[in-house]
Length: 146
Picture 1: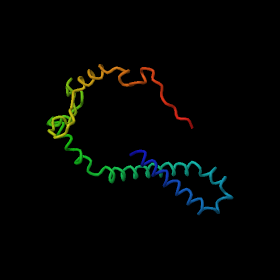
Picture 2 (picture 1 turned 90 degrees about the horizontal axis):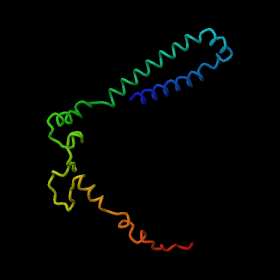
Picture 3 (picture 1 turned 135 degrees about the vertical axis):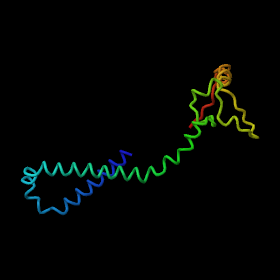
Picture 4 (picture 1 turned 90 degrees about the vertical axis):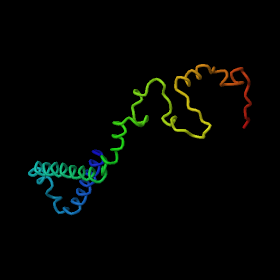
């Protein structure tokens, strides 16, 4: 949100600066005198303008892009307080028997949900040669001649 406000503020100040460069061409012969005499006042004005534009852009971003955020996320607060949904709780509170949060939902699917401990036990039994097949035994591959 700060980055968006900063981007918008810089874009507005650049547009204002380019517009002023076009409008104040008659001051070109006097630019050294003007910057020498009024440089600090111009810089203070630009700093104040930058801060005010940044604050306005920040307020507009909060007003229009974070609309009803509290209401939209209130259902998550209720789930955390109630503890009804397993997926809403942090993983550390679920215990050692971690499963997919959808495992409690009955389905007609052929997909079986297993615990992570069982998965790691099964993967520990798989050997690399069984995964590689004939390549692990030194079989030559056919090469394409181009």
